[in-house]
Image (cartoon, rainbow, N blue to C red; front, side):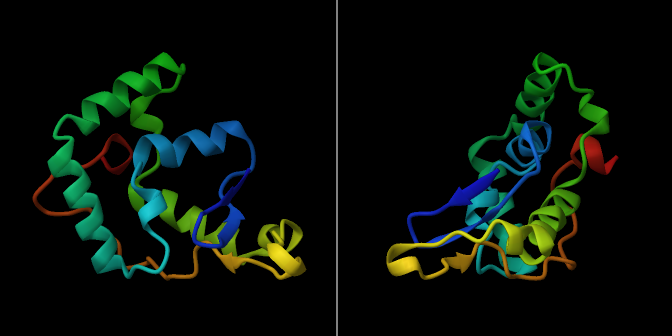
Length: 129
């Protein structure tokens, strides 16, 4: 699966539908990730959680509806690391997305989020437990 943003960024985000579901459930704010540091991304995630305080319950309910075990979902950090890996690895080379005039679009994810850790003020997601 390849995502193309309106800002001229593109890149693979999943190898198949099951993998695509993970960022949507675990880190639904993932589209705000490009260009942000781990610290900035934590602020985006915290803001998202402020707007949806029942995010964990919604995530778990959606996972169960899809036949997934909420406790088996990966952590936010793991999901974002996978997005970064897909964006910079051989899959990204194989899935090069060309824009106008056959110029490659900017990579979707170039940041290093290895410093992304669960926030201290929110409960861990199922995959972080």
